Image (cartoon, rainbow, N blue to C red; front, top):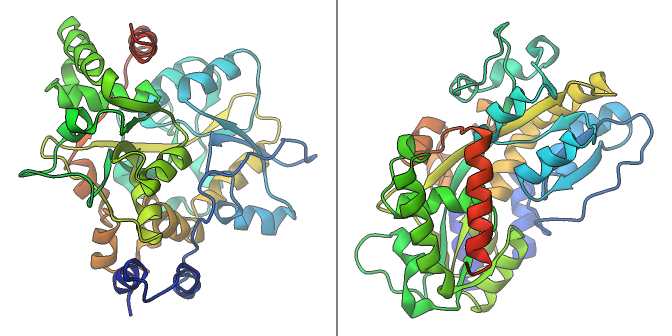
Length: 373
């Protein structure tokens, strides 16, 4: 019985979630039972510190590091890229930080980060080159600013038993007045603003124009009365979808994957307008106090073991091409993935790095909209 058959068995009650998890382990794939665990305090002497999103501070991404150093890295968790950058500008020094491509250019321009010496990474030869060759990811000496790590999409996770789809799937689900008070949105403008721009028909190469600001903010204001909650805590979104308190929410791949594992009838939509696609990665602080450990953190996160866990438990793509070898095309399709990232990235809308002035205005406008203004 393959992974897809087992998913169906879990849904119909023929296979328990515990048995399914044990089976995944047999495939060499772990499953995340608590999607976003509390971050551990950065107090272990001599260990590197990773500044990351919630959910990446779990041992499965750091098994090689732990084996080499006898302990996990220190972790510090942020809720959004702007919050993270503000903290580092204020003097918070880490070894490795975990931004996304849209943030990478602005982050590198601050002088807080150093280019990556890829010769210090044993797994570098297996990293997909198309994920490295992103706009703005090349320092003057040709080295990358960011090592790609995870990639995927932002779309709509909806309850198939509670939402009526007429025709093709669409971002309109999150603007449907029939579901007023039962819609969830990501609180970060780094996702929501771009997705609303897709809904409003704004081309991404024009997203910084006045026209784009007017159309995108108008769409978000139109949606505001329908939204039950704005949050970047995907556990909250998943629980609300599971209970039926919400019928649809803007999420990343992982929410739909986790709910499907639990037998909840949900689908990660493929909107006719296109999903938002993204690539995130790892950067080293200019003043990294544990530079050797920084490279060990990155190399461990690039390992096949980390990649298999990423794909199986989160439904995200991983940058190590070998991580996909343990999955069939059918299994990857069921997770909304492909072994070729271009199949996914080109099928959606890939966000474009913007200047700090635009980022600040976008975030300020979105905060006002969420507050009802």
